[in-house]
Length: 342
Image (cartoon, rainbow, N blue to C red; front, side):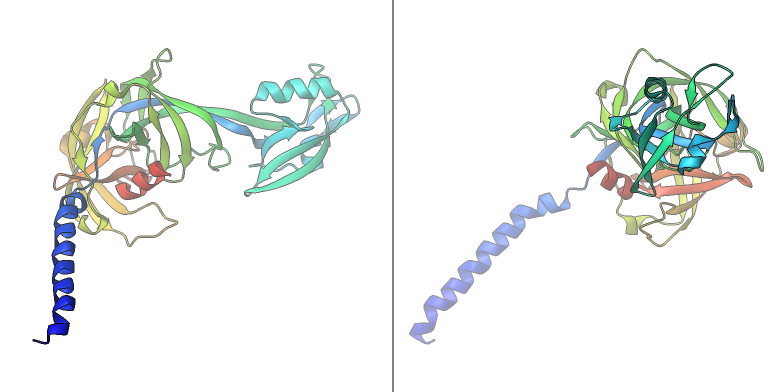
């Protein structure tokens, strides 16, 4: 061996030993998988919009005949009115109060349409039936319903639910979130699903108690932070990598009576290729005789029910097939975790 090469070879040997030691030290961290608590409990959901959503227009009867100021100024179904004369509006009451204050004077309206801001000029009309100034626009500022919490992260306090967004029932557009909360609920009854007629969970809400605050309404679910972590206590379950999810037997956790969460058998019929814009990752079919007897399959309100396969959390129920209530779709849990992190 050349004497000059010894220092270099010793350096390489020591570097290899150092890298091996670092690799061994990091191995337990890299092998540790993310775990969350699968919940499966029904909750009441209240959502207040950021602005008011235009869900339709109608004529206003005036002394000069019927007029429609909303349509005349260019307001469209699905527009989200955020400001009137620079004043921010989030409720129907705020809009009505401003219209009475302005009377028949021209006003500027700022609205969101297809994620772009539009500026319009309108003039409210005096309704001869009740003596109030009106725009002739049907507007909505809040929604309420029942759904299922998918997971709770004890490390951060975050929760995810539904697996799909809350859309306005008239426009089918995602409701812009100003604030919202989830409330304790007990399932009081079930309207069974049938071909062409989706079923529904019927619940009783405890409006005096808040379980968590909403922070996001997305196409892939609603997200927030629990204010009462004891409500979601449970054993954390490992999240499955997407490439481990297979067509085959699985189970769901869901709450279809009182506050009891039960586990029921399903089949994952198909795992679809990952698509960024489509949150329907799995095709599902309910096979559990007890669940089929009680609900007919998947019903409204079960959205968010966690899906388990091979001891790991893989996703959540999101939609039912109208023509076949025993079948529906699911979202991969990784999408929900990513939305929650955002």
